[in-house]
Image: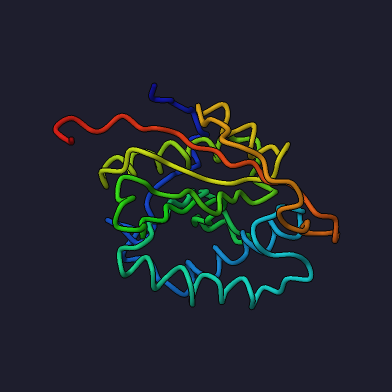
Length: 203
């Protein structure tokens, strides 16, 4: 069942480097995305990295790994932009959230895509941004003909609760899957999936 979400008027969700977003200066965009990733890791989120985690490392993740895959059509990225004013009163936009759809799958799994790196800057949370990002991502997955989404997330996390609210189903739990972002304590991960209704006219 499709979900809807009301986000504040100053929040805009769109696909990164697609449509009007394609004209945005890539270096500036990557700097903002790196800031989100850096802040999320240092707030304790387990998203493949752990502190100390430098802003240069965060920038390298986007520049060296994500950007080439986006340009190759192997990965699609959704961003949430916040309209705000700087100290001089000038209006501008800042990326405060993002999520990725991994499309490169084995030949026998072309109906599937993986959700990765749902990130919302700690200063921008509790505005419905995570939910809005996921809803936009599902529409992109449908447009790609994908009817199954899979993901993993830290067991018991707020992200797991969000995915449940969006009708993701738990397939299983793996204990001691990865170390925490701020401590060496090992955390379990929950494997989840969601079946999508194909767009009209798709098989």
